[in-house]
Amino acid sequence: MSQKTLIVGFGIAGASLAHRLDEQDRDFKIISDHSQQATRVAGGVINPIALKRYKKAWNADLFFPKALAFYKALEIKLSDHFLDLRPTYKALKSAEDQNDFMAATDRSFLKDFLSSKILYNDKIFSDADAIGVVNSTYTIDLNTFLDQSIRYFDMRFLSDSFHYADLKCLEDHSFNYAGEIFDQVVFCEGYGVIHNPYFTDLPVYGNKGEYLILASDDLQLQNRILKSKYFLIPLGDNLYKFGANYDRNSLNNQPTQDARAHLLEQFEKMISCSYEVIDQVAGIRPTLKDRKPILGAHPSYQQMFIFNGFGSRGVLGAPHLSQILSGFIFGKKTLDSDIDVKRFY
Image (cartoon, rainbow, N blue to C red):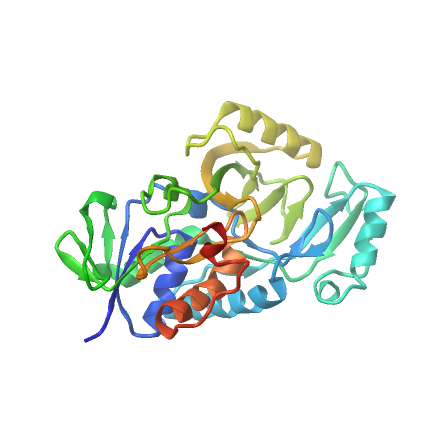
C-alpha cells in the first residue's frame, strides 16, 4: 500500500516539496488557507551573492544550479513562463565599495557572476557614479508559480485552514486528520509555525518585509534589476517592485505608512524619475537566529516533519532542500546538523 503525505502550507517550502513528491509519484494532499503571504509578496530574486559584503550566499554553489534546473523544469510541467534572467546593477557609492567589488571578481565562484568591468556615468543611479554588474541573477514570478501549481495539483489541494485539534496521532505512528489517514505530516507553515502546538519551542522569529509597486514610464530598465539599499525589480508593463525593508516589531501582513514613507525616501535618493505608487504589500519571513532553515522530524512523533525557516532566500534554497527532505523522509537519508531541527532539541 502506498504511503500518503499531508503537506500543511503552500509557500515556497510547501510548493517545492509538493513538486518533489509529485516527481516521485507519491500520494499526497496539500492544505493551505493562504494566510502566510511571505512568498507571494517576495521579490523573487534568485541571487547567489550577498551584495552587502560581496560574499557567496550560504551553500549558493549547490543551491543556485539546483534552483535554476528546478524552475526551468517546472515551466515546462506547468505550461507557463515565470523565470527570467535579469542582470543586477549594484550602486557603488565610494572608492572603497568599488575596490571591494573588484576584489570580489577574483574570488572563486564569485568571478563567474560578477563583471570585471565597472560602469561609470551611466546616469542610472542618483546616489552613485559607479555600477557593478552581477550577470547571472534571475527573478521568479512567485504568484504565477504558486497559482499554476495550485491549478496543477487541483483535487490534491484543499484551500482551508488547518485545525491542529483535528489531527489525531495513531498507535502505528500514522495520523488521522478530519477522517483521512496520512502516513506523514509535513508542516511548511512559514511564520505561521508560531501557532503550531507541536513545534512551540523552536526559536523562529518574524521579519516583516514590505514592497512598493511603482509605475513609471521614465525608467526603461530593459529587464535589469537595480540594487542600492533596496532592490528595484522590473515586473513588466512599466511596473516595478521596490524593497523590501526589515521589521521585527509590526508582525502582520498589513502594509504600514512608516514603511511606505521610508521606502519612498530611499527610492527618491536612489533614482530620479516620475512615478506613481500602485500598491504596497507586506509579508512575514520566518527566520532563525543562526540564519539556517529547519528540516527534519519531531522529537516525539517520528512521522511528523517540519520544513521552514528560509528567511529571505527561500527561492534559492527550497528547491534543493525539498529534495533533501524527501530523501530523509522516504529514503532514510541523514540531514546535515546545521539544517536538522534536532539542533534545537
